[in-house]
Amino acid sequence: MHNPVFIPGPTNLPEQIRRAVDIPTMDHRSSAFPPMLNAARDGVRSVIKSQAAQVFIFPATGSGGWEAAITNTFSPGDRVLAVVNGLFGQKWVELCKRHRLDVTIIESEWGEDGSGRIANYLTEDKSHLIKAVIATHNETSTGVKADIAGIRGTLDACGHPALLLVDGVSSIGCMDFRFDEWRVDIAVTGSQKGFMLPPGLAIVAFSADAMNATGSAQLSRSYFDITEMSKANSAGGYPYTPPVGLINGLMASCDLLLTEGLEAVFARHHRRAAATRKAVFAWGLELCAQRSEIYSDTVTVIKLPEGADGNLFATHAHDRYGISFGAGLGKLAGKVFRIGHLGSLSDALLLAGLATAEMALVDIQVPITLGSGVAAAQRQFVMGEPFQRKAAA
Ligand SMILES: *Cc1c(COP(=O)(O)O)cnc(C)c1O
Image (cartoon, rainbow, N blue to C red; front, side, top):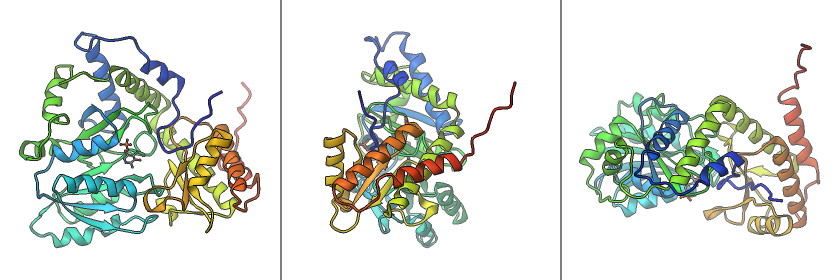
């Protein structure tokens, strides 16, 4: 019996997707490959609600997607403005610095979101030296979401031409993401979160403006060069050997998401996040995220009382009960634990995960009442959405 994971990626594999990944050897230069590639790229475009984005699929992970976004778009010394409020934002900025970009960081407390402050920087930048605003849609280390539509609104209000680059690794396929409507210029994600695939793909989407920026971008790039990728993709192929199993899986994943309906997918993530938070409050614990407007729908990060160790919680839950939760990352290590509730789950599995979290909390001597969180989550499931009796046929 295989237990589900409650980490915020890699997520649980639906059987349908697992089978789609497991295909016999395919000659990627044969006529069998282009339809698969095109379907996967079209599927991703639909999932991010775009008509015209150029979608590229690299054998890598989300971090490789960050690198593809940066190296194809900028030149050494280019100025970018980055909103950082957690480990993933921090890591993307670190990557920008290694590529010699001039990064201005809007830093805020982990658990908050500082994207409201970009207006100050944009209005001061009269000569438009800032080439891009970089944001994390869902900061997985803190369980905080950013308002990407709001950032676009600020760029527009300031009349600033900076590109908008968004890390959507733990939001795309789970939370509403509107590439076209928000006029995102580059979106980055990976295979192992909302797409419910094994790790191994970096998925990036470029707007027309971002594609244009590539023409003058001087940063070195080779493996992640979208010009080469784009040329090969238009002919239905790759500049190197594509990971065909994962690409077939991505096609299946998009199918699954689009068949369920994106709004239904987002609604179930929203519901399960609400139930998880109810459990946390019933335990008498606090969230890392400080305001309800910024609560994530994919991961809940929970502060532990002084003296309780989040790393011990995670290793204990795994070793004793065979269930994985996320430990704290970066400067939150030890102080928090994380419950991932994205991708393939059910209400019943989430309740089982919450019940296990309760046992592990009691084991490490956090004073909570067994069953209290589970009951609160059950009430949320029952009352949040009253059961409708079907009318007799
Ligand atoms: C998981 C994740 C990443 C990418 O991590 P990889 O391990 O490289 O796939 C980037 N950003 C966020 C917000 C994430 O959750």
